Image 1 (cartoon, rainbow, N blue to C red):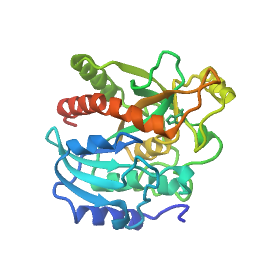
Image 2: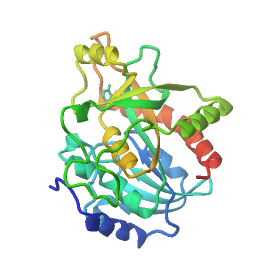
Image 3: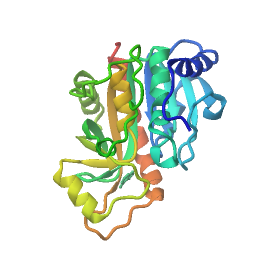
Length: 280
Ligand code: HPA
């Protein structure tokens, strides 16, 4: 297992992708648990199963199909990750971050990152979409960073700023698009934990106190790599369950996948609208 990768390893993967696709992608899209259906909207699609790419972490979670889908969405060249690797699957943080490096080397300037998350904010209901305004890097505060290891200066700075991790202009575009499409769009802070267990009631009370609105097991390391690499980020959480703040309702992976069916059509409207509106 790789603790970190070299630039030539990232480029090896990028070349393998490039050899299979037509136009180089400008937008990356990462689809979380139960949200993979959004990849069906891609036109002129080329599919690349993750095991066919060198160094690429394959996805082992049910509800993640584990392939790249390259093509067009709203006339924009996109590279869609249908499924992602998580730290809890046993991958290193470097492996979790590798797909973002490959996107960077392919010329992607904007990534739209989605996940399934538990609603910590009591106003949120399963099936809601939350625009991520900021994150709490709880997995990182305990020492796990995808940037650990020798810094590759060609890719970005050693100490990257995270002030505007989630791009303000793209967020404004998402809010406009959702309003026009009549889709209810919640907004809030995503707390990234390692998982794979769901949270205890005490965990959830803590998360609420520190300012979390949603909680999940992905996204944060990807956003950190994307930002360090100078890519713009737009993030959405599909709220799949009310995290068990009452201490009585167990959370299951089945309900996470079920809620995806409600969330995908809303996300598709928002993502299409943003891609149509944002040229660069
Ligand atoms: N907690 C953490 N991750 C999740 C949840 C949750 O309640 N739901 C979906 N992903």
